[in-house]
Image: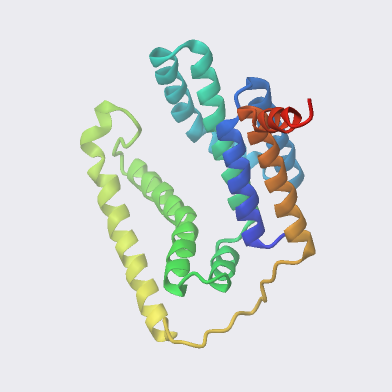
Length: 233
């Protein structure tokens, strides 16, 4: 629907708005809105699996903040972190890495940098699948590699094969890139990336919403109104 650069800009603006938001109901409302968006995109199940990994980090961050400041600040900090990560989960779930990389190249980013970034994003699920395969193979051999201190001495049986397979994958990718003339000038793209009126309108509305939030939070509109009214007593 939108250009990848538009999605990135909207996600960045939304993240900035969440960071400066103070009321808990506003942060919670943003998270619920993101849940509805994920439901419409059909990514709710994958988000639930991802949430199992993020919740421990969120709880830890909230508890540390609550211990350092107060419980209210801890709840708000944990909610903000959860909502921030959800914003970028929506972005990456709705944007293909190669589309993002090619669009950024179109915007002026060096191709090698964009390719490295998009490839790293694509390799995350690949490495995850390899890790699960290695865990299943080691369990079948009777090696306890479950999480916990007792299995710590068996972790090399998981990490060494994972590192070796990662290096083999990187070497195969490097050979394929060299065979295809990676880095040669004059590269063309199958898809033409242009920011249309819909993209500019979405970015403008998002920026205006962020500006309004900043004005309300820091009282910029009220102070400007006071200075203006002083000229007309």
